[in-house]
Length: 468
Ligand SMILES: Cc1cc2nc3c(=O)[nH]c(=O)nc-3n(C[C@H](O)[C@H](O)[C@H](O)COP(=O)(O)O)c2cc1C
Ligand SMILES: [Mn+2]
Image 1 (cartoon, rainbow, N blue to C red):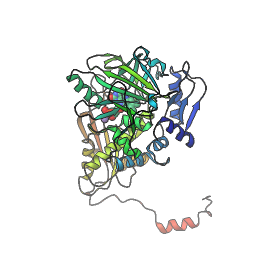
Image 2: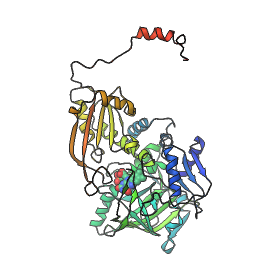
Image 3: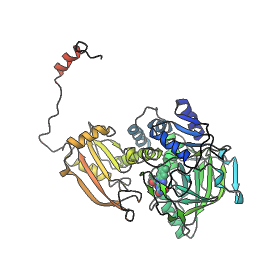
């Protein structure tokens, strides 16, 4: 799979894409159709008739595990936790991108006065949003001015003017770290925004890969071949050759405009009252013929955002725990319902006293877990961490609150609505040991049925009036 059009073809083959030919308004109607469809775990939607526009919009590319499997190149019935396991298996192998001389993304070009982002069917998503959002299922590409490391990140972009996009680079995100370096050098930061590519690129945009590592290399390792890229027109950033739309521009760290609010993945608005934020001044736009505008509803769980963050954050936490070489970890699962980041469930085979506690404290000390992870649950290996009723069973019958630990201070996301709006940088952590303690001499005796009686009953099953 090389581009969005390959993905659309794959989804049509599997019967998980619906073309909407009826006219739909970009102003709330399109997003609301997408959201209602996502709540029913419906297909990806290709809106072919957006009011006032000739170009289509695609939404809901990643909303189901089935479609994430298609994106990951796995059989479509693969469970989410197994997609995470696959990511961990190949995550440390890196395949850098391959630069081509040109590609379909160069078919059309706007520069100077001709630049007009309103030419694209940009949706407005929720009633209290500050405006239309150009960037939801997109990626922002930047380069570290010191090391040349190329980063891919998804950071929402508000359509402010025909050549202005408002940003929200949260403190410590890779784009923010790079922007501060350009600021110190007294230079604007070049950026490339890609809307509409192989949805794997969107998954990479949400992935919290380590600093100085390029998401392009991980995408290549998942695809098993280099991602084909081309150089931008006005800077030396690289973008996927088959991208639908590429917006080239720059960010001045010292210039601000109001941005937000926006209906975020927490189910609440963020940036209420609007916030002064850095913005992208656009220098050039290139796009394919009949470009497909890719978008997602973000909003209340479960949407594309929750699914992509679940696989990316869950797999990265798992990877980092395995890099710590702690034995006995069987599986790590970060539920999409918690946006893959607020709750982690880890199943393990205990091998020595204190082992479960080691795993709990390790999880919140990984680079991934140290940012925003609030509740960690560890269960014994007989519990599938993705089987939530079984996890609740373990919490009910194996967990003793006197063994819970609360860690008072840790880094938080400013979008977490459980914290007061004015102080969201620091949160607490809850560690739940739902295992049967390794060091107990006398363990609870599990109930098993008498195998002979079971066999006898099975022989009489029909006689007892049961169908099968
Ligand atoms: C749809 C979507 C929207 C997002 N919006 C933002 C945002 O506005 N600001 C932000 O800092 N992170 C946002 N994120 C989370 C980042 O993409 C994520 O933290 C990612 O790891 C950032 O890349 P980086 O680690 O290379 O900085 C969003 C994620 C998704 C999937
Ligand atoms: Mn990164």
